[in-house]
Each structure stands twice: as structure tokens, then as C-alpha cells.
Length: 275
Image 1 (tube, rainbow, N blue to C red):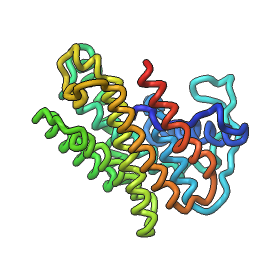
Image 2: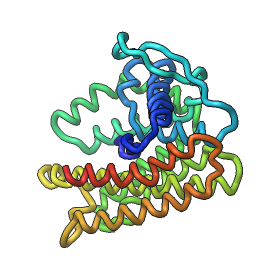
Image 3: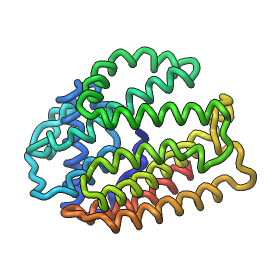
Image 4: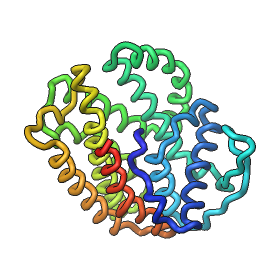
């Protein structure tokens, strides 16, 4: 993913930051254990949020232990005592990564295309393992890729239509975090809004490059001030995400999740747009 769903770290309390960082490091560890060392390089804050949300919806304490970092053995990190509870998020990360590589092979040119072709075999086995473990994630991500490609091939000019596949796949993945119907609806709405946010921010960040290469970007169809237009769309998505978040039965770490929803999303899109 893109790492656009992240906390405003300056507003986190020390203990909150340690938990947030501990989840991040634990997801890295779980990726390596389940899918090999190279899978750790795919780590992003988007899936850290998914992992934190998954943990926060369940009963029980979040217990950590100290260990050494795989990338820097001199550094000690906090890891969850039971990283198996991150299997859902780790598998979602691997499945989405694999289809992103496949999509890059289809869409990109030059060195980016060659790089995608080169790394695809490295992650094919990991993808198969993740897909077998969570076929429901595999199904919705595959459908997302087909729908997104179809819209791009027809050069879709509607922002709402273009963002729909990204919003829908996140809605489906988030809804899998709970078996209770009311919570599933709220999770689906949260995922939908975050998926739309990610799509729009990624399109905004890629706009200049896509203009140079002639690649598809729905924002190329916008007349007037693109930054102003996109900002309005971001706030709509963020506000709706906050409403959905407030409907969830969060059992722990609510302040960290709230930091991400209420502060981190806005901080991130402002920072990325100003680049």
C-alpha cells in the first residue's frame, strides 16, 4: 500500500507511541515469519492501522516483549508476545502487494516494468500461501484489480467511479474484522471512506508524473484548482470515516486509533499535497 493512513506522532503520548510502534514492528516480524524476509520490505502504516484496529476490536490485553530488530540487530524493539493475531493483516498486505506487482507489469513502462517483472517470482509463493489462508481477501482484491483496470481502460472521467474499486476493496477487507452485523456495517463504511481517501491522495501525488508519461489519472480531467478540489474531497472522506469510527465498539487503544482518524489523515494529506 501507500502508507497514507498513519498517526500524528507528535500528538501521541509516550505510551501510545510505544504501542503504535510495537504493532508496526510486530507486523514486520510476522510478515517475515509467514512470508519470508523480503516480505518485510512491504511493511506500511496502512496495514499497521488494519492490524491495530483488528487487535482493538477484540478482548484481552496487548502484551509486548523486547527483541532485536531484523534490519538492525543493535536496536531493540517491542514485539507482541503473540504475533499470530496479525495473520489477517499480514496476509492482506501480501495479497495486495502481489496484485500491485501484476498491475505494474501491465501498466508501467521502462525500468518500473522491468523491476515488477523481476520481483514477481519472489512473491508468487507468498501470495499463494496468503490466498489459501484468507480466500475471502483474495477474492475481493482480485475483483478490485479487474474493476480498476476496466475503468482505466475506458479512461473513466468520473472521480466517484474511478475511486469506487479502491473504496470497495477496503470496505470488504475491513468488514471481515467482525462477525457482528452492526459492527460489520460500520467497519465496511470506515474501510470505504479510507479506500477513497487513499485513491484520491495517490492520484494527486502521481498527477505530475502521469502527465509526463501519459498514464491514466482521473484528476487530469479536473478544470481549475486541483489542490482545492481534491482537498474538499479529502475532507468529505475523512469526516465520513470519523462518523463510521465512532460507531465501532473499540475495546482498547481507542486514543491511538482516534489520533489516526482525527489528526493523522488530515496531517498526511496536507503534507503529501504540499510536496
